[in-house]
Image (cartoon, rainbow, N blue to C red; front, top):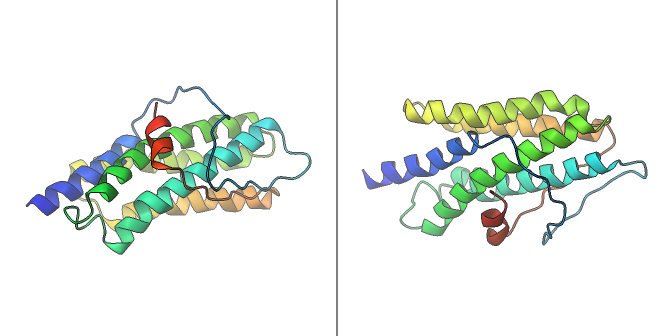
Length: 178
């Protein structure tokens, strides 16, 4: 019972990430520990910001949520309580970063083609809330978000820009959700 409740709580935090406000301010003064963004010489500011925000969203998603869920660390929350807390913070952080990336993509001529799959990823995050509250959550729901994010990366790559995963620090997770 405790295991199911803890798993539900962690997944609920992920679902709530999709319910965040779509209005936010963008700040590019963030420092990251592993930031590497590959850009062409003609990269515009909105494109560079898009690459930064998507890199942070990818890094947080894969490192704090997708990886721990697939490895089972979140399935044993009493053994890994910090993993559960970080996953909840990461879910809010990812929603925030995807919303910023969507704004930047709309402002960038080169990145406009990624807005549809990016919007789909944000929508899937919101849909997770419904699947969790109805009790029908599965790993495939989470895989759907990963698939949409990978489509965004593929479209960006075809436009000549590489999104590089950047794992935010726990303090960045906490600071980047507001």
